[in-house]
Each structure stands twice: as C-alpha cells, then as structure tokens.
Picture 1 (cartoon, helix red, strand yellow):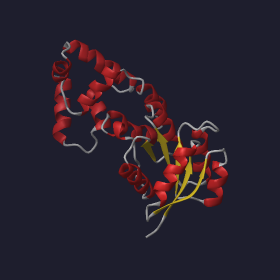
Picture 2 (picture 1 turned 45 degrees about the vertical axis):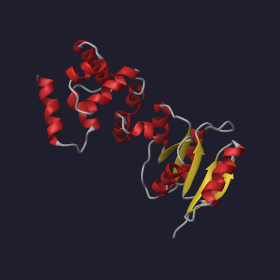
Picture 3 (picture 1 turned 180 degrees about the horizontal axis):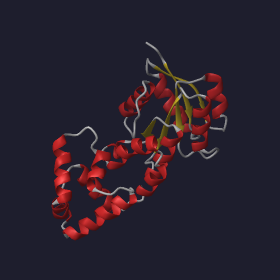
Length: 229
C-alpha cells in the first residue's frame, strides 16, 4: 500500500496536533511534517509531500500566496484547503490558484479522510454545501474558460437569486418557482433576468447548460420550450 505523504500547514497548535494524530492513525496516510510559522514553502521543497493540507485563514502568512508558490514549484503536489465555511469568492480564487479540494473544519473524520484520499488520486473535492448548487458546476467551466471575474461577480447573487438558480437547475418553470416562494411570476422573471446578467448569459437554456451537462435531453427540451412559451 502506497502511503500518502501529507504536509500540514496550520497555525493553531491544538488543531495541528489533533489533525496530525488522526492522520498518523491511518495505515495509508503519513503526516510527514507540520508547520504554522511561515516556513511552509521550505518544508514543501524539502519533503515533497503528495498532499498539502492548508488552513485558509493563516495569521502568519497569506494562504493564497502559499498555494501559488507551491503549485508553481511543485505542480504534482495536491493542495487541500481547510476552513469553517469558505465564502464562494474565496473558493473561486483558491481553485484558480490550483487547489484540488476543500475540507470544512466541522466535517466528519470519514469525510476528512475521504477528501485527502480522493485528492491524492487526482479528484477535485468541493465543500458539501456547494456541491449541490449551481456554483459547483460553474467553477469548473469558469476556470477552463478564463471567466473567473464573471464567476466572482456571480457569487454575489442574493440568497433568493441563488434559490431561484437551484430550482432552475432542477428544471422548474417560472410558474413552479413562483408557487414555491409564493411570489408573482413577474418577480421570478426579474430574478432570472438579474441572474443571467450576473453570469453574462442570455437565456435559461444557457444557464441550464452550465448546470446540467450530461443530463437527459428531455430536461434541455423542456427548458427550450419554456423559453419560447
């Protein structure tokens, strides 16, 4: 069994020691070193870990800069960012910089270990609260197409707009969305207009293509009919 070599970058000593102990109890994971005092890049250079676990909110250094430096020098090293609840704009910036996964600090041990193992095998792992939303599907497209600025703007949608987006992704019509929130259909249309404008898209069909790639032709057909109806 090949061991996953992990470098932990966390400036909270209690968390650092606790995470290290948990990792080293696993037969396939080894915390080769830990740090929290600004020498993360030097340790990565010396130890060449397979996975770097990085606290998003380091006090002693800029976490995003650490990601950029490690990815630039060691492109085969995977980086997983840890945070309580990362805001969407932060997720975009860190994904753009080369992060492979995110772990919420209130995640279960199983989720924590699963993320490390998945990333070590080349998978990309987003926080659970984001994986079922439009945002998680757009991240990949935005990174590939270079439209990260648009994505950051989109991340500033209101809570109601995000709720509308999720229902559109489920194939709901304006009428069904209006009924769900007990609002007028013209209000839903206004929300949809604002969403499309923020995403620099033109139609609900385009929006669906971002969120439902690989879904059945029936849903795409339904959305096309709605647009012309």
